[in-house]
Image (cartoon, rainbow, N blue to C red; front, top):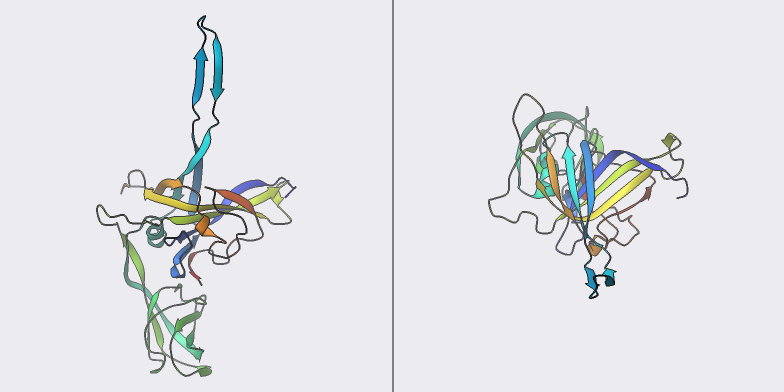
Length: 289
């Protein structure tokens, strides 16, 4: 771009698990979006090149050569606003703790097409992709315990159900949600994230005091990161610090990324490029096909 846009304000962050090859993992609970982060700081680290110096008998320097410094990795510090269990599990491993999250909503409509059940609720349900739900009072086809899939948003709930198609029709019943309510640290001595994770951040691209007319965001890509919790976690009369630190290197296996829209080589520790939009799902899990 030739508009010389400045990078101002981080607006979205996406963290994704990687497989053993470095590629983003597929599934409903492998990538997580959030806008609730305070800062993402990264610092390039360099290995200093050797200096060769020889002196003549009279003390003057007769040979001098300095090898160039080379980029070794980048180091990170990520601060988030709250102790987000799902984000923490992707970043550093551990175990998600599930329980009743208090969401019970009434069903107003049902449909089933190509082994995907769709329920409509009378109000926004707050249930996310990958949550466990219990459906009751609808009918024998729809009742049961399931994991929600892509398309679950607002007042729509979707889940896999192998059955004969059901034409959209009014319905009654309830959906009870069992979701993530906490997080447990990895076992002592366990390598909790052997494959690492990928981190992407979007910031505003500002030109002359307003968003750029074309590609109004910068997208920062860190294709491989190893993270850990940093600093003291203190329970006191104040907000708890939720800070992670780690390092990043190149990762050719990242390929086109979880959205299949990164067109550059990811063998570098970090890259950035202009982007037209931030991810559509601004908070929570997103399914990676």
